[in-house]
Length: 487
Ligand SMILES: NC(=O)C1=CN([C@@H]2O[C@H](COP(=O)(O)OP(=O)(O)OC[C@H]3O[C@@H](n4cnc5c(N)ncnc54)[C@H](OP(=O)(O)O)[C@@H]3O)[C@@H](O)[C@H]2O)C=CC1
Ligand SMILES: O=C1O[C@H](COP(=O)(O)O)[C@@H](O)[C@H](O)[C@H]1O
Image (cartoon, rainbow, N blue to C red):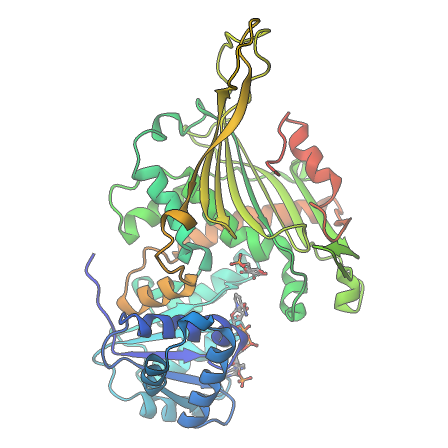
Protein backbone atom coordinates (compact mmCIF):
# COMPACT_ATOMS: atom_id res chain seq x y z
CA UNK A 1 0.00 0.00 0.00
CA UNK A 2 1.03 3.56 -0.54
CA UNK A 3 2.69 5.12 2.48
CA UNK A 4 2.15 8.74 3.22
CA UNK A 5 4.64 10.05 5.81
CA UNK A 6 3.86 13.11 7.87
CA UNK A 7 6.32 15.91 8.58
CA UNK A 8 5.45 16.39 12.25
CA UNK A 9 4.73 14.24 15.29
CA UNK A 10 2.95 15.49 18.41
CA UNK A 11 3.31 13.34 21.49
CA UNK A 12 0.88 13.95 24.37
CA UNK A 13 2.02 12.47 27.68
CA UNK A 14 5.63 12.87 26.57
CA UNK A 15 7.03 12.80 30.12
CA UNK A 16 5.07 9.75 31.27
CA UNK A 17 6.20 6.20 31.94
CA UNK A 18 5.19 4.84 28.54
CA UNK A 19 6.93 7.66 26.69
CA UNK A 20 10.12 7.28 28.70
CA UNK A 21 10.33 3.49 28.55
CA UNK A 22 8.95 2.78 25.08
CA UNK A 23 8.03 5.71 22.86
CA UNK A 24 11.18 7.83 23.04
CA UNK A 25 13.52 4.79 22.75
CA UNK A 26 11.44 3.59 19.77
CA UNK A 27 11.57 6.96 18.05
CA UNK A 28 15.30 7.10 18.67
CA UNK A 29 15.65 3.59 17.18
CA UNK A 30 13.80 4.69 14.04
CA UNK A 31 15.90 7.84 13.81
CA UNK A 32 19.18 5.97 14.27
CA UNK A 33 18.26 3.55 11.48
CA UNK A 34 17.33 6.39 9.14
CA UNK A 35 13.66 5.42 9.09
CA UNK A 36 12.13 8.72 10.19
CA UNK A 37 11.28 11.20 7.45
CA UNK A 38 13.98 13.85 7.01
CA UNK A 39 13.01 16.94 8.92
CA UNK A 40 10.32 15.23 11.02
CA UNK A 41 9.91 17.27 14.20
CA UNK A 42 8.70 15.69 17.43
CA UNK A 43 6.79 17.97 19.78
CA UNK A 44 6.42 16.59 23.28
CA UNK A 45 3.75 17.91 25.59
CA UNK A 46 2.55 17.49 29.16
CA UNK A 47 1.62 19.86 31.98
CA UNK A 48 5.19 20.13 33.26
CA UNK A 49 6.75 23.52 32.77
CA UNK A 50 9.57 22.50 30.44
CA UNK A 51 11.10 24.34 27.52
CA UNK A 52 12.65 22.66 24.46
CA UNK A 53 16.02 22.18 26.12
CA UNK A 54 14.43 20.93 29.34
CA UNK A 55 12.52 18.29 27.38
CA UNK A 56 15.63 17.28 25.45
CA UNK A 57 17.40 16.79 28.78
CA UNK A 58 14.49 14.69 30.08
CA UNK A 59 14.43 12.65 26.88
CA UNK A 60 18.19 12.09 27.09
CA UNK A 61 17.79 10.86 30.66
CA UNK A 62 15.09 8.43 29.54
CA UNK A 63 17.25 7.17 26.67
CA UNK A 64 20.25 6.77 28.97
CA UNK A 65 18.09 4.68 31.26
CA UNK A 66 16.13 2.60 28.79
CA UNK A 67 18.24 2.18 25.66
CA UNK A 68 20.42 -0.93 25.57
CA UNK A 69 24.10 0.05 25.70
CA UNK A 70 24.81 -1.26 22.19
CA UNK A 71 22.18 1.09 20.73
CA UNK A 72 23.68 4.29 22.10
CA UNK A 73 25.43 6.29 19.44
CA UNK A 74 26.40 9.84 20.34
CA UNK A 75 25.98 11.23 16.81
CA UNK A 76 22.59 9.58 16.37
CA UNK A 77 21.55 10.74 19.83
CA UNK A 78 22.45 14.33 19.17
CA UNK A 79 20.62 14.26 15.80
CA UNK A 80 17.57 12.75 17.47
CA UNK A 81 17.46 15.32 20.27
CA UNK A 82 17.54 18.11 17.67
CA UNK A 83 14.21 16.86 16.36
CA UNK A 84 12.58 17.42 19.76
CA UNK A 85 10.73 20.44 21.06
CA UNK A 86 8.25 20.89 23.90
CA UNK A 87 5.00 22.70 24.53
CA UNK A 88 3.43 22.75 28.02
CA UNK A 89 -0.19 21.64 27.68
CA UNK A 90 -2.97 20.98 30.17
CA UNK A 91 -5.50 19.02 28.19
CA UNK A 92 -8.26 19.92 30.63
CA UNK A 93 -7.76 23.62 29.90
CA UNK A 94 -9.20 24.78 26.59
CA UNK A 95 -6.85 27.77 26.47
CA UNK A 96 -3.94 25.38 26.15
CA UNK A 97 -4.52 24.63 22.48
CA UNK A 98 -3.88 28.00 20.81
CA UNK A 99 -0.24 28.19 21.95
CA UNK A 100 0.14 24.52 21.02
CA UNK A 101 -1.08 25.21 17.48
CA UNK A 102 1.31 28.12 17.24
CA UNK A 103 4.22 25.93 18.31
CA UNK A 104 3.29 23.17 15.84
CA UNK A 105 2.80 25.60 12.96
CA UNK A 106 1.83 24.56 9.46
CA UNK A 107 0.41 21.03 9.21
CA UNK A 108 -0.07 20.88 5.46
CA UNK A 109 2.84 18.43 5.34
CA UNK A 110 1.00 16.11 7.71
CA UNK A 111 0.82 15.73 11.49
CA UNK A 112 0.64 12.48 13.46
CA UNK A 113 -0.58 12.77 17.04
CA UNK A 114 -0.02 10.12 19.70
CA UNK A 115 -2.23 10.36 22.79
CA UNK A 116 -0.25 8.64 25.53
CA UNK A 117 -2.49 9.93 28.30
CA UNK A 118 -5.42 8.66 30.32
CA UNK A 119 -8.51 8.09 28.12
CA UNK A 120 -10.46 10.59 30.25
CA UNK A 121 -8.37 13.24 28.46
CA UNK A 122 -9.22 12.04 24.94
CA UNK A 123 -12.39 14.14 24.74
CA UNK A 124 -10.89 17.51 25.70
CA UNK A 125 -7.88 16.65 23.58
CA UNK A 126 -9.72 15.99 20.32
CA UNK A 127 -12.14 18.89 20.85
CA UNK A 128 -9.29 21.29 21.59
CA UNK A 129 -7.28 20.06 18.61
CA UNK A 130 -10.26 20.56 16.32
CA UNK A 131 -10.85 24.11 17.54
CA UNK A 132 -7.33 25.22 16.66
CA UNK A 133 -7.16 23.46 13.29
CA UNK A 134 -5.05 20.49 14.38
CA UNK A 135 -7.55 17.83 13.28
CA UNK A 136 -7.90 18.46 9.55
CA UNK A 137 -7.42 15.99 6.68
CA UNK A 138 -3.62 15.96 7.01
CA UNK A 139 -3.75 14.95 10.68
CA UNK A 140 -3.95 11.39 12.05
CA UNK A 141 -4.26 10.32 15.67
CA UNK A 142 -2.93 7.32 17.63
CA UNK A 143 -4.76 6.19 20.78
CA UNK A 144 -3.24 4.17 23.61
CA UNK A 145 -5.22 1.62 25.56
CA UNK A 146 -7.34 1.29 27.60
CA UNK A 147 -10.05 2.08 25.06
CA UNK A 148 -12.80 1.89 27.67
CA UNK A 149 -13.60 -0.59 30.41
CA UNK A 150 -16.71 -2.05 28.77
CA UNK A 151 -18.69 -1.75 25.55
CA UNK A 152 -20.56 1.38 26.63
CA UNK A 153 -17.47 3.33 27.70
CA UNK A 154 -15.56 2.14 24.65
CA UNK A 155 -18.39 3.38 22.39
CA UNK A 156 -18.27 6.70 24.21
CA UNK A 157 -14.55 7.06 23.54
CA UNK A 158 -14.97 5.96 19.94
CA UNK A 159 -17.88 8.39 19.40
CA UNK A 160 -15.91 11.23 20.93
CA UNK A 161 -12.92 10.65 18.68
CA UNK A 162 -15.10 9.89 15.64
CA UNK A 163 -16.81 13.27 16.03
CA UNK A 164 -13.49 14.84 15.06
CA UNK A 165 -11.44 12.20 13.20
CA UNK A 166 -12.75 9.75 10.58
CA UNK A 167 -11.89 6.07 11.11
CA UNK A 168 -9.21 6.09 8.38
CA UNK A 169 -7.26 8.63 10.45
CA UNK A 170 -7.63 6.84 13.82
CA UNK A 171 -4.84 4.46 14.86
CA UNK A 172 -5.81 2.37 17.91
CA UNK A 173 -2.77 0.75 19.46
CA UNK A 174 -2.55 -2.86 20.59
CA UNK A 175 1.17 -3.20 21.17
CA UNK A 176 1.02 -6.99 20.71
CA UNK A 177 0.39 -6.38 17.01
CA UNK A 178 3.71 -4.54 16.84
CA UNK A 179 5.63 -7.56 18.10
CA UNK A 180 7.70 -9.30 15.40
CA UNK A 181 6.67 -12.78 16.53
CA UNK A 182 3.00 -11.88 16.53
CA UNK A 183 3.29 -10.74 12.91
CA UNK A 184 5.14 -13.99 12.29
CA UNK A 185 1.89 -15.88 12.92
CA UNK A 186 0.65 -14.41 9.64
CA UNK A 187 3.87 -15.41 7.87
CA UNK A 188 3.68 -18.93 9.27
CA UNK A 189 0.05 -19.44 8.32
CA UNK A 190 -0.16 -17.63 5.01
CA UNK A 191 3.41 -17.83 3.72
CA UNK A 192 3.56 -21.62 3.87
CA UNK A 193 1.30 -24.17 2.23
CA UNK A 194 1.57 -27.15 4.54
CA UNK A 195 -0.37 -25.92 7.60
CA UNK A 196 -3.50 -24.65 5.89
CA UNK A 197 -5.02 -28.07 4.96
CA UNK A 198 -5.00 -29.13 8.64
CA UNK A 199 -5.65 -25.68 10.13
CA UNK A 200 -9.27 -26.38 11.03
CA UNK A 201 -11.54 -28.54 13.17
CA UNK A 202 -10.63 -31.67 11.20
CA UNK A 203 -6.92 -31.26 11.94
CA UNK A 204 -6.81 -29.39 15.25
CA UNK A 205 -7.99 -30.67 18.61
CA UNK A 206 -7.50 -27.54 20.69
CA UNK A 207 -5.63 -24.25 20.85
CA UNK A 208 -3.99 -22.93 24.02
CA UNK A 209 -2.83 -19.37 24.48
CA UNK A 210 -0.82 -18.46 27.57
CA UNK A 211 0.45 -15.01 28.49
CA UNK A 212 2.08 -15.34 31.89
CA UNK A 213 3.93 -12.56 33.65
CA UNK A 214 6.14 -12.63 36.72
CA UNK A 215 5.52 -8.98 37.60
CA UNK A 216 2.80 -7.88 40.01
CA UNK A 217 1.09 -4.53 40.21
CA UNK A 218 4.21 -2.51 39.38
CA UNK A 219 3.28 1.17 39.83
CA UNK A 220 -0.09 0.88 38.16
CA UNK A 221 -2.43 0.14 41.07
CA UNK A 222 -4.82 2.96 40.15
CA UNK A 223 -5.39 1.60 36.69
CA UNK A 224 -4.99 -2.13 37.25
CA UNK A 225 -7.30 -2.54 40.21
CA UNK A 226 -10.12 -1.01 38.16
CA UNK A 227 -9.31 -3.21 35.20
CA UNK A 228 -8.22 -6.73 36.19
CA UNK A 229 -6.70 -9.42 34.00
CA UNK A 230 -9.70 -9.88 31.72
CA UNK A 231 -9.88 -6.25 30.61
CA UNK A 232 -6.15 -5.63 30.80
CA UNK A 233 -4.96 -8.58 28.70
CA UNK A 234 -7.81 -10.64 27.24
CA UNK A 235 -10.08 -8.01 25.66
CA UNK A 236 -7.19 -6.75 23.58
CA UNK A 237 -3.91 -8.68 23.27
CA UNK A 238 -5.17 -12.23 23.76
CA UNK A 239 -8.18 -11.82 21.51
CA UNK A 240 -5.90 -10.38 18.84
CA UNK A 241 -3.83 -13.57 19.10
CA UNK A 242 -7.02 -15.65 18.81
CA UNK A 243 -7.93 -13.70 15.68
CA UNK A 244 -4.55 -14.19 14.02
CA UNK A 245 -4.75 -17.93 14.67
CA UNK A 246 -8.40 -18.31 13.67
CA UNK A 247 -8.86 -15.86 10.79
CA UNK A 248 -9.49 -16.84 7.20
CA UNK A 249 -6.67 -15.99 4.77
CA UNK A 250 -7.02 -12.32 3.80
CA UNK A 251 -6.84 -11.78 0.04
CA UNK A 252 -4.19 -9.10 0.43
CA UNK A 253 -1.98 -7.76 3.21
CA UNK A 254 -3.89 -4.51 3.45
CA UNK A 255 -5.52 -2.74 6.40
CA UNK A 256 -9.02 -3.51 5.15
CA UNK A 257 -8.49 -7.15 4.23
CA UNK A 258 -6.58 -8.09 7.39
CA UNK A 259 -8.94 -6.24 9.72
CA UNK A 260 -12.06 -7.55 7.97
CA UNK A 261 -10.92 -11.11 8.62
CA UNK A 262 -10.02 -10.43 12.26
CA UNK A 263 -13.35 -8.70 12.84
CA UNK A 264 -15.19 -11.77 11.49
CA UNK A 265 -13.43 -13.90 14.12
CA UNK A 266 -14.46 -11.52 16.91
CA UNK A 267 -18.04 -11.62 15.70
CA UNK A 268 -17.89 -15.43 15.65
CA UNK A 269 -16.75 -15.73 19.26
CA UNK A 270 -19.40 -17.72 21.10
CA UNK A 271 -20.90 -15.56 23.82
CA UNK A 272 -20.75 -17.49 27.05
CA UNK A 273 -24.21 -17.48 28.68
CA UNK A 274 -24.23 -16.52 32.39
CA UNK A 275 -25.01 -20.05 33.58
CA UNK A 276 -22.01 -21.42 31.62
CA UNK A 277 -19.54 -18.79 32.87
CA UNK A 278 -18.56 -20.69 36.08
CA UNK A 279 -17.74 -23.78 33.96
CA UNK A 280 -15.90 -21.94 31.20
CA UNK A 281 -13.88 -19.39 33.19
CA UNK A 282 -11.61 -19.36 36.24
CA UNK A 283 -10.43 -16.24 38.02
CA UNK A 284 -7.66 -15.92 40.52
CA UNK A 285 -5.79 -13.43 42.64
CA UNK A 286 -2.23 -13.99 43.87
CA UNK A 287 -1.32 -14.17 47.52
CA UNK A 288 2.24 -14.04 48.85
CA UNK A 289 4.71 -16.56 47.52
CA UNK A 290 8.01 -16.87 45.69
CA UNK A 291 8.58 -15.89 42.09
CA UNK A 292 11.89 -17.01 40.61
CA UNK A 293 13.26 -17.46 44.12
CA UNK A 294 12.18 -14.03 45.36
CA UNK A 295 9.60 -13.72 48.12
CA UNK A 296 6.83 -11.37 47.01
CA UNK A 297 3.72 -9.91 48.64
CA UNK A 298 0.17 -10.84 47.79
CA UNK A 299 -1.98 -8.56 45.64
CA UNK A 300 -3.99 -7.09 48.53
CA UNK A 301 -0.81 -6.39 50.45
CA UNK A 302 0.76 -4.67 47.43
CA UNK A 303 -2.40 -2.66 46.93
CA UNK A 304 -2.73 -1.80 50.61
CA UNK A 305 -6.37 -2.87 50.88
CA UNK A 306 -8.68 -5.79 50.14
CA UNK A 307 -9.74 -6.16 46.55
CA UNK A 308 -11.69 -8.63 44.45
CA UNK A 309 -9.90 -7.74 41.22
CA UNK A 310 -8.70 -10.79 39.30
CA UNK A 311 -4.99 -11.02 38.53
CA UNK A 312 -5.45 -14.31 36.68
CA UNK A 313 -8.06 -15.54 34.29
CA UNK A 314 -8.48 -18.75 32.30
CA UNK A 315 -11.23 -19.15 29.72
CA UNK A 316 -12.51 -21.88 27.46
CA UNK A 317 -13.64 -20.07 24.32
CA UNK A 318 -15.13 -21.14 21.01
CA UNK A 319 -15.10 -19.58 17.58
CA UNK A 320 -18.46 -20.51 16.12
CA UNK A 321 -17.85 -20.84 12.43
CA UNK A 322 -17.35 -23.63 9.92
CA UNK A 323 -13.57 -23.85 10.31
CA UNK A 324 -13.47 -24.02 14.11
CA UNK A 325 -16.63 -25.87 15.09
CA UNK A 326 -16.01 -27.82 18.29
CA UNK A 327 -12.38 -26.68 18.78
CA UNK A 328 -11.82 -25.18 22.24
CA UNK A 329 -9.52 -22.18 22.51
CA UNK A 330 -8.13 -22.20 26.06
CA UNK A 331 -6.80 -18.81 27.15
CA UNK A 332 -4.99 -17.99 30.36
CA UNK A 333 -3.10 -14.99 31.59
CA UNK A 334 -1.90 -13.88 34.98
CA UNK A 335 0.48 -11.82 37.03
CA UNK A 336 3.02 -13.30 39.43
CA UNK A 337 3.24 -16.58 37.60
CA UNK A 338 6.37 -18.77 37.66
CA UNK A 339 7.79 -17.50 34.34
CA UNK A 340 7.28 -14.72 31.82
CA UNK A 341 6.00 -16.40 28.71
CA UNK A 342 3.68 -15.69 25.81
CA UNK A 343 2.96 -18.79 23.84
CA UNK A 344 0.42 -20.37 21.53
CA UNK A 345 0.17 -24.16 21.46
CA UNK A 346 -1.85 -25.78 18.68
CA UNK A 347 -2.60 -29.38 19.45
CA UNK A 348 -3.42 -31.44 16.40
CA UNK A 349 -5.80 -34.41 16.32
CA UNK A 350 -4.27 -37.82 17.03
CA UNK A 351 -3.64 -40.18 14.10
CA UNK A 352 -6.90 -41.98 13.18
CA UNK A 353 -5.34 -45.41 13.72
CA UNK A 354 -2.06 -46.42 15.29
CA UNK A 355 -0.31 -49.37 13.68
CA UNK A 356 2.13 -49.24 16.61
CA UNK A 357 -0.53 -50.02 19.22
CA UNK A 358 0.93 -52.55 21.62
CA UNK A 359 4.23 -52.54 19.73
CA UNK A 360 5.82 -49.22 20.43
CA UNK A 361 4.12 -47.28 23.16
CA UNK A 362 1.72 -44.41 23.02
CA UNK A 363 1.60 -41.86 20.26
CA UNK A 364 1.37 -38.23 21.34
CA UNK A 365 -0.67 -35.94 19.12
CA UNK A 366 1.49 -33.40 17.26
CA UNK A 367 1.73 -29.96 18.81
CA UNK A 368 2.86 -26.74 17.22
CA UNK A 369 4.28 -24.31 19.76
CA UNK A 370 4.67 -20.68 18.80
CA UNK A 371 6.74 -19.00 21.53
CA UNK A 372 6.27 -15.26 21.23
CA UNK A 373 8.43 -14.18 24.18
CA UNK A 374 10.84 -14.09 25.86
CA UNK A 375 12.40 -16.55 23.40
CA UNK A 376 11.15 -16.49 19.84
CA UNK A 377 10.69 -19.85 18.21
CA UNK A 378 8.34 -22.16 16.42
CA UNK A 379 8.48 -25.78 17.44
CA UNK A 380 6.62 -28.75 16.02
CA UNK A 381 6.51 -31.74 18.32
CA UNK A 382 6.55 -34.92 16.22
CA UNK A 383 6.85 -38.63 16.92
CA UNK A 384 10.13 -40.26 15.92
CA UNK A 385 11.63 -43.72 16.27
CA UNK A 386 14.25 -44.06 18.96
CA UNK A 387 17.39 -45.63 17.52
CA UNK A 388 17.71 -49.30 18.51
CA UNK A 389 17.10 -52.92 17.50
CA UNK A 390 13.99 -53.73 19.54
CA UNK A 391 12.56 -57.04 18.32
CA UNK A 392 9.05 -56.54 19.66
CA UNK A 393 8.24 -53.30 17.85
CA UNK A 394 9.59 -49.78 17.58
CA UNK A 395 10.16 -47.33 20.36
CA UNK A 396 8.65 -43.94 19.58
CA UNK A 397 9.37 -40.67 21.27
CA UNK A 398 8.14 -37.11 20.89
CA UNK A 399 10.93 -34.89 19.53
CA UNK A 400 10.99 -31.20 18.63
CA UNK A 401 11.47 -29.83 15.14
CA UNK A 402 12.56 -26.38 16.18
CA UNK A 403 12.97 -23.18 14.24
CA UNK A 404 14.64 -20.66 16.51
CA UNK A 405 13.87 -17.22 15.17
CA UNK A 406 16.41 -15.78 17.63
CA UNK A 407 19.16 -17.90 16.07
CA UNK A 408 17.98 -17.75 12.45
CA UNK A 409 17.77 -13.97 12.50
CA UNK A 410 20.61 -13.47 14.98
CA UNK A 411 22.10 -10.60 12.97
CA UNK A 412 18.85 -8.66 12.95
CA UNK A 413 18.07 -6.30 15.77
CA UNK A 414 14.97 -7.13 17.80
CA UNK A 415 12.80 -4.05 17.74
CA UNK A 416 10.47 -2.68 20.39
CA UNK A 417 6.85 -3.25 19.28
CA UNK A 418 6.30 0.51 19.36
CA UNK A 419 8.97 1.05 16.70
CA UNK A 420 6.80 -0.76 14.17
CA UNK A 421 3.64 0.98 15.38
CA UNK A 422 5.09 4.49 15.53
CA UNK A 423 6.59 4.08 12.07
CA UNK A 424 3.24 2.91 10.72
CA UNK A 425 1.46 5.81 12.41
CA UNK A 426 3.95 8.27 10.92
CA UNK A 427 3.60 6.65 7.48
CA UNK A 428 -0.15 6.07 7.65
CA UNK A 429 -0.42 2.26 7.44
CA UNK A 430 -3.35 1.02 9.56
CA UNK A 431 -2.82 -2.73 9.04
CA UNK A 432 -1.49 -3.31 12.57
CA UNK A 433 -3.97 -1.00 14.29
CA UNK A 434 -7.32 -2.01 15.70
CA UNK A 435 -10.48 -0.92 13.94
CA UNK A 436 -13.55 0.26 15.84
CA UNK A 437 -15.68 -2.77 15.00
CA UNK A 438 -12.91 -5.06 16.31
CA UNK A 439 -12.71 -3.24 19.64
CA UNK A 440 -16.45 -3.25 20.11
CA UNK A 441 -16.85 -6.94 19.25
CA UNK A 442 -14.06 -7.69 21.75
CA UNK A 443 -15.93 -5.82 24.48
CA UNK A 444 -19.24 -7.52 23.69
CA UNK A 445 -17.59 -10.88 24.32
CA UNK A 446 -15.74 -9.94 27.51
CA UNK A 447 -18.69 -7.97 28.92
CA UNK A 448 -20.76 -11.19 28.77
CA UNK A 449 -18.10 -12.93 30.86
CA UNK A 450 -18.09 -10.15 33.44
CA UNK A 451 -21.89 -10.26 33.55
CA UNK A 452 -21.63 -14.01 34.22
CA UNK A 453 -19.18 -13.42 37.06
CA UNK A 454 -21.57 -10.90 38.62
CA UNK A 455 -24.66 -13.08 38.09
CA UNK A 456 -22.95 -16.02 39.78
CA UNK A 457 -21.26 -14.00 42.51
CA UNK A 458 -17.89 -15.35 41.34
CA UNK A 459 -14.86 -14.12 43.26
CA UNK A 460 -11.24 -14.83 42.32
CA UNK A 461 -9.69 -17.88 43.94
CA UNK A 462 -6.38 -17.31 45.66
CA UNK A 463 -3.19 -18.72 44.18
CA UNK A 464 0.31 -18.43 45.64
CA UNK A 465 2.58 -16.10 43.66
CA UNK A 466 4.91 -18.19 41.54
CA UNK A 467 2.33 -20.81 40.55
CA UNK A 468 0.23 -21.33 37.43
CA UNK A 469 -2.97 -19.95 38.99
CA UNK A 470 -5.73 -21.68 40.93
CA UNK A 471 -6.05 -25.45 40.52
CA UNK A 472 -9.44 -24.86 38.90
CA UNK A 473 -7.52 -23.60 35.86
CA UNK A 474 -5.95 -27.04 35.50
CA UNK A 475 -9.35 -28.66 35.89
CA UNK A 476 -10.77 -26.39 33.16
CA UNK A 477 -8.79 -28.24 30.51
CA UNK A 478 -8.40 -31.61 32.22
CA UNK A 479 -12.19 -32.04 32.18
CA UNK A 480 -11.84 -32.14 28.39
CA UNK A 481 -8.87 -34.49 28.56
CA UNK A 482 -6.48 -31.67 27.68
CA UNK A 483 -3.33 -30.70 29.57
CA UNK A 484 -1.89 -27.19 29.47
CA UNK A 485 1.33 -27.10 27.48
CA UNK A 486 3.79 -26.32 30.33
CA UNK A 487 7.24 -27.70 29.83
N1 LIG B 1 3.04 2.64 31.08
C1 LIG B 1 2.73 1.56 30.37
O1 LIG B 1 3.47 0.58 30.30
C2 LIG B 1 1.45 1.53 29.61
C3 LIG B 1 0.61 2.60 29.58
N2 LIG B 1 -0.53 2.54 28.83
C4 LIG B 1 -1.44 3.69 28.78
O2 LIG B 1 -0.77 4.79 28.22
C5 LIG B 1 -1.23 6.01 28.82
C6 LIG B 1 -0.05 6.73 29.46
O3 LIG B 1 0.48 5.87 30.43
P1 LIG B 1 1.74 6.26 31.33
O4 LIG B 1 2.79 6.89 30.52
O5 LIG B 1 2.08 5.03 32.08
O6 LIG B 1 1.11 7.32 32.34
P2 LIG B 1 1.88 8.36 33.26
O7 LIG B 1 0.93 8.70 34.34
O8 LIG B 1 3.23 7.89 33.60
O9 LIG B 1 2.05 9.62 32.28
C7 LIG B 1 0.98 10.40 31.89
C8 LIG B 1 1.48 11.51 31.01
O10 LIG B 1 0.39 12.36 30.69
C9 LIG B 1 0.68 13.70 31.16
N3 LIG B 1 -0.56 14.30 31.63
C10 LIG B 1 -1.30 13.94 32.71
N4 LIG B 1 -2.36 14.75 32.83
C11 LIG B 1 -2.31 15.63 31.81
C12 LIG B 1 -3.11 16.72 31.41
N5 LIG B 1 -4.21 17.08 32.08
N6 LIG B 1 -2.76 17.40 30.31
C13 LIG B 1 -1.65 17.06 29.61
N7 LIG B 1 -0.84 16.03 29.93
C14 LIG B 1 -1.16 15.33 31.03
C15 LIG B 1 1.70 13.49 32.27
O11 LIG B 1 2.51 14.60 32.50
P3 LIG B 1 2.10 15.75 33.56
O12 LIG B 1 1.60 15.07 34.79
O13 LIG B 1 3.35 16.54 33.72
O14 LIG B 1 1.03 16.52 32.87
C16 LIG B 1 2.53 12.38 31.65
O15 LIG B 1 3.39 12.90 30.67
C17 LIG B 1 -2.30 5.59 29.85
O16 LIG B 1 -3.57 5.64 29.25
C18 LIG B 1 -1.92 4.13 30.14
O17 LIG B 1 -3.02 3.39 30.59
C19 LIG B 1 -0.82 1.46 28.07
C20 LIG B 1 -0.01 0.36 28.05
C21 LIG B 1 1.16 0.27 28.86
O1 LIG C 1 -0.87 -3.97 27.94
C1 LIG C 1 -0.31 -4.55 28.85
O2 LIG C 1 0.69 -5.40 28.55
C2 LIG C 1 1.68 -5.73 29.51
C3 LIG C 1 2.39 -6.97 28.99
O3 LIG C 1 3.03 -6.64 27.78
P1 LIG C 1 4.31 -7.45 27.31
O4 LIG C 1 4.66 -6.81 26.02
O5 LIG C 1 5.35 -7.26 28.39
O6 LIG C 1 3.90 -8.87 27.19
C4 LIG C 1 1.07 -6.00 30.87
O7 LIG C 1 2.10 -6.14 31.83
C5 LIG C 1 0.20 -4.85 31.26
O8 LIG C 1 -0.46 -5.14 32.48
C6 LIG C 1 -0.83 -4.55 30.21
O9 LIG C 1 -1.50 -3.33 30.51
